[in-house]
Length: 231
Image (cartoon, rainbow, N blue to C red; front, side, top):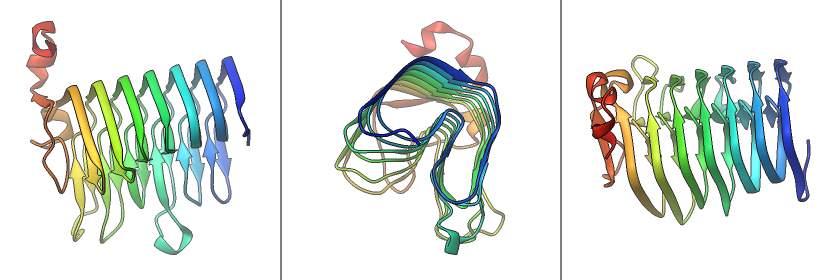
């Protein structure tokens, strides 16, 4: 756990990370500060909430030029606070920014599951993509998104983002919310500029669950191979 304005620069981890309880990350469990030029390649597992391929819980600050490639696997029981699982960050706090980041690992957990971020507060994400599967296992009220599982702040701004992983909930799940970019837009204003998703891979024809959001375009796999599709 690293907090209170810490600065991590030119760092990496190739080890797997496993923890009991909350806040487990491929690089660091919890951070309030900045990360620049960093990556993590190990799988992340835990029996609590706030799991991320790079950072489990990122309260505030910025992450730039970073990526994670490991799978993230959380618990599957509501009583254990099994929420907030992301390919890069489990929880993205108020005022936090992500820039030039990506995640490729599959993400599995009870709910609030995202290919890049499990749950985001008021935040800004620029030049980011996720290609791993987002799978929420909850039988009811599950939410999963190709980029972000759930939003929880007054505003969220996404600029030049892309998602290409399948988005799933458990068979027979009820009252769920899924989206190619955002699973559940719970509150606030969402601004998307040049957002895209591969609709063949996400399996969905819409960007945001439970609400409509503009500024995002679904593409076929064939279209993603043409640069003009992202103009």
